[in-house]
Length: 367
Ligand code: GLA
Image (cartoon, rainbow, N blue to C red):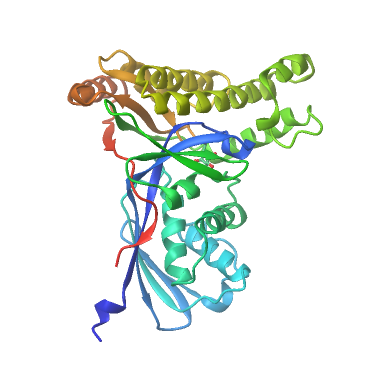
């Protein structure tokens, strides 16, 4: 048998979130799409009893004895996402087979487009080697890998979108019931993602801090399991008891959940104007109440909103750099690309990278 035929190829996509930011770990709603960029894993079984990893993007050929994986410390490198997945597979009582994974990520790392979820999900498919998990269990396993081993207390959105993506459809995900509906993006607009090309280091510590601030706000509502369960009227009634920062965080989360539901309804009605307006409101709330934006993201949004044919624009993902997502009329995209590039570059001396994104299928075996 030719060696090439032993190699199994898996792909998992990155995602861009259209609306519903920092709501997933509060039991709320999000609406991401899976994108064409993602992570490809080429898996060759056999060899020594170890997991060998190499990546096109990072130098080095790493190997980890299978017997050490359950107890090892994290390495502080990209390999931790794969090792975290391997540990969660072991924790299910499943066997890890000797394997060599050759990894090629097409989603830029640190861009807020979920390169980590794409790596986790594609590696999980490879390491599971045909052992079937339900799509939800696969997404949850990868989320646990990131929370338990990498140490990032993320919600379920990224891994869920990478697993459940569908061509031409956005995913309306209820992070409480962890169920979704697909929603077509109305004709007449395309999803355009613009990369600030900055990633401020603050990101992961600020993320943890936001999770804690949401918990603090929630502690004022005994009997409620998550901020998802608190209405805006209840928040207003309790406002004088809550410190300013957790109050602002909770205001963002509660209003953002309402915006996702309104966005969903507007998408079903094909109302691009309403969708765009909600995206801008979401951005302003992330900028002022949740404080996870940055000057580069704000300026991309502000530039986009001066241009014809732009329905709306907002930061997407965790924040502190990364990308914006804009809804743009197809005939206005060329102008968008040239104007956004020229104006952003003039202001920051950085060339933004612009991607046209179409909703794409979720993780799968390619060959
Ligand atoms: C990161 C996390 C997600 C989500 C977003 C913010 O991408 O991994 O779970 O919380 O930030 O919406």
